[in-house]
Amino acid sequence: MKITEHKVLTEFSPARVQFFRIDPEDISLTLSDILRTLMNLSWLSKFDQEFEQKAFASRAKKTIDDIKEKFAKCVDDSISKDAGEYVVSELARETLVLKLDYLDIPLDELVGKKRSGNPGFDFHSQNQITDTVIFGEAKYIATTTAYSSALPQIVDFIRDGKDVEDLPELKPFCTISALKRAAGGSKGFSAAFSAKTTKTDRIIANITKRPDFQSLLQYEELILVAVDL
Image (tube, rainbow, N blue to C red; front, side, top):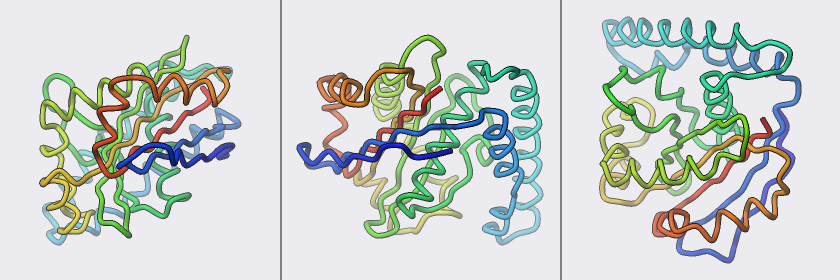
């Protein structure tokens, strides 16, 4: 992948708002790179007990097998909806880790157990300087830029308390200080979404006038990631 744009939107407060645009480049190579990253289970060492490592390894293997199957159906640079959301999630997560030096936390589906209904946030990270947990939601829509799905989903998840529900699963990866701050309301969010040929300035203008975007400015950080898919 290649980060083609990075903007800090200083006109908004109190949240620190950033916008990234990502070019996945060669889709087949990107899918291979994502699978290689997902299959790196070194994060299991975060769990002290062997029984925990075995349990989470079993969960992760099932998810990885499922993702492999979805990726195998992608041919000639076309991506299905299911595969697309994994691509958007993983590229957004990697952007936070590589560009911002935030904590490298595996995708939620590798760690969490499938729950009924909409399971919750897709990816997480942590600002290591401010001890701020980042809760990320990814959306892929083949025909349009998908911020209009990602942003309201974040607002709904906050209303339903799904960010707080994620905190126990994040304990092996985040600092206790960050988890306590998140439980108390000091947290950040990332909306990652597929983007088409729409110009960046237009995407930003459309997003920033939305009520759901405005409602998220009360939090510490808001990171927007547009992936050119």
